[in-house]
Image (cartoon, rainbow, N blue to C red; front, side):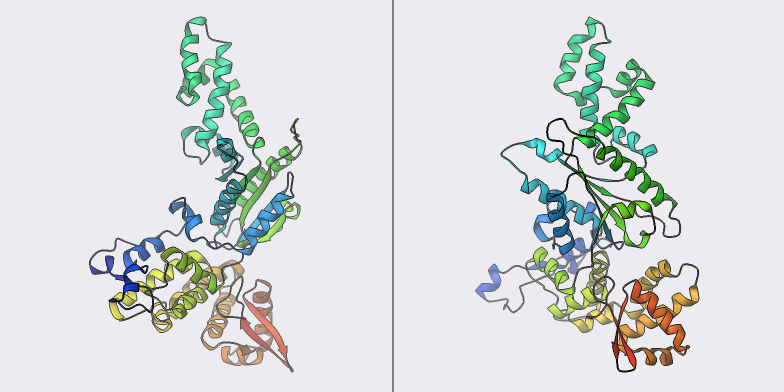
Length: 434
């Protein structure tokens, strides 16, 4: 978003309806535009401070549904499906924190290790990343792995080294892994790494796996990852703990755009993470800043509709609106300013990127779909026969196109007499209320 300097970086606003001179204004929350820019620049959950979940996260129904399902599962697997940017990584983080909060007991720090969340890496990259410190679980894994190496070394090294090993045992993280693996042998070390990793995840109660953002034109990488995750789940499902016979549950986050015919999807319990409703977008803003200023509520609702509830896009549009207002606006930011700031051309650009997934080899259909959706965006619902006339195409072409857009939840059609009324869908790719 860039560094914000000058007057805009320190400008602040009392809560809506307060007079600057009133006593209420002194104790009411205010927000500086620099704070809004900073918030809007944090497009990914990984870039935010850890406690943001407790401060302003809005809980989607899908996340609550998964948490409830997990309570009754043993060795189950759930696929969390959502559009790119809709908040899948944030949902996994929220599940992790909720699990830890519900299962907290006294000062038992081991509960923090009962649930782990990580970005999936292919096996060829997995072990190296765990050992070189670039994996989210590196610290925990290296500690466990080092402790096992130390036990192996105790049986191999002469007595002269035992005093040193005794010191290292107090803090296994201080063990020189390169030296230790060389001492026990590379072949044995390689086998141990993989075995320790499997036992490491087996000891958990919940695995939250975030798959990468894949190229939309090549599903091979996703297919390979899914096959490896399937192997892991299948291996875990065949293991039994001697104490309580429990097995870890798994939640895998997958882009909805990439959801295809892979056999693994049929073995998962699929839950879709819908985009936020405009009211939920306003709630997130209000939670974060304790006020909606400098926006009116209608302005934030409009931003929620324009972004179609995809939170990452909402943040981008928020910053875009704020910049426009600083150059041209006075007073509070209303819906009219939002519509000027986030031009139709910008909406069309973002929408075209989505449509490329539906029509990767048919640029003519992509363009026609874009024109149709933007027409509905500008004028509201329309009769299907009117759309064919306005787009100057044959009715059967509009009918086929709408069938595809309806299947992928861009539009809704309802019958009215001999015609059908078409409107943009609100949830799951929606611009206006259905």
